[in-house]
Image (cartoon, rainbow, N blue to C red; front, side):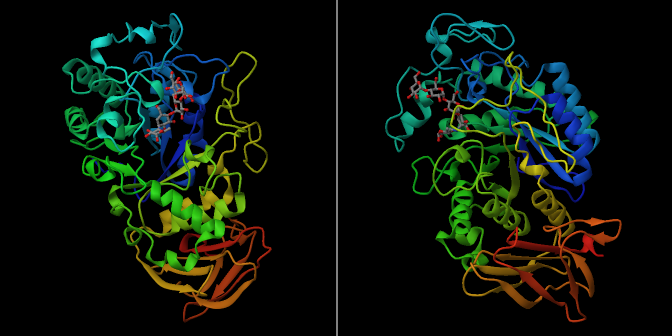
Length: 474
Ligand code: QV4
């Protein structure tokens, strides 16, 4: 279940973290479809516990499988899926199969009004009772398979996926989403569930809904959250044949490289050469909603110049099933999404350039990022050729004769005639500007009969990347 069911030449999933369904529907029609995005990963859809201050992570604490959250209700969800599918943008849901909520004093009331007593492992909205869960224990040794898979991840009540009842409820939940037209699932905390149980669940799911434009017998796309830095007892390899797996080493290594801890010239062997999963099994990303909150090597919107370079490389280099993050601004781990005084999530607002202004970051609306989604669409099915580097942090390569990328992460200029592999002509650099009505608002590069062009990326240029492709020929 590795096929994401993208439309045409599209690529790249955007995670619209904490967005409302009605806003996503609108975004599919007005931005994502026209810009050639392939899909959206949406925040959890089923009812969750309500936590004081409304941190984003309350949505990782389910109460029932009713489709009502702060992002909207079932009707709004269904409307979003239909409208996105209509413009060729697939929806992938973040699903919590591992657990229900953590402890809560007394009776908890969820976002759909359902009551539960998590401390007693009582979730009548499903219903689940204590016998549907593993006995309570804490994970103290992350290399102990029993603890990782049968104890409680940060105290979240741990469902027993070997039980017929639990399996049937999970399958029913996922099938309901398939019926509504989704293309697949991000499986949260997959590492904390036995792969045999997941295999049973995935293989029991319905085919995708043909009324939403999926071909007959299409299987739901599955990408599993398994954090494997290497040498872990529960490894990514146990899951990779069931569906794609989040390749966290990609995120860590790309952060390292673009932070300057590893010379970019080494990226020539990027991908499996770095010990990553085979391309078709790897869900790749520069940052995700968890690791953007951790200190460390991972890059996020908070380091925009390096982040844009890393994202350009991510989308230009032919490796992995790519996902870009679209964040809201945060100060600390618990910062809630933009909300009003009644704790309702607010809609993003845009300035005249289309950038988000009211607490939403919307990396996917940064020109340097959506232009690279366009680049990736333009160069589809080409190989990487003509690698060049300066032995340090300046690199360049071609994608067949359709695209060319150059990056300068040195503290001195890149000024050089380079082989762009492109047909002769003038091309607009889609990073520093756009091609509008036949003229380029940024740098342009003239390519001669031999495919060479003069490439300049000053060390103090606004961006350290230059990208040319055949769909942006002046
Ligand atoms: C607290 C204590 C615990 C204690 C517990 C007892 O910290 O030590 O056992 O109380 O009741 C929130 C709080 C957390 C609290 C917990 C339970 O932050 O302090 O525990 O609730 O009340 C998200 C957030 C978590 C959040 C959780 C549930 O990141 O902070 O916990 O949602 O609301 C590993 C896993 C990987 C996981 C990653 C974070 O292998 O699978 O940790 N990633 C996924 C999601 C992530 C999500 C979860 C899993 C849980 O990507 O966003 O956690 O669904 O690497």
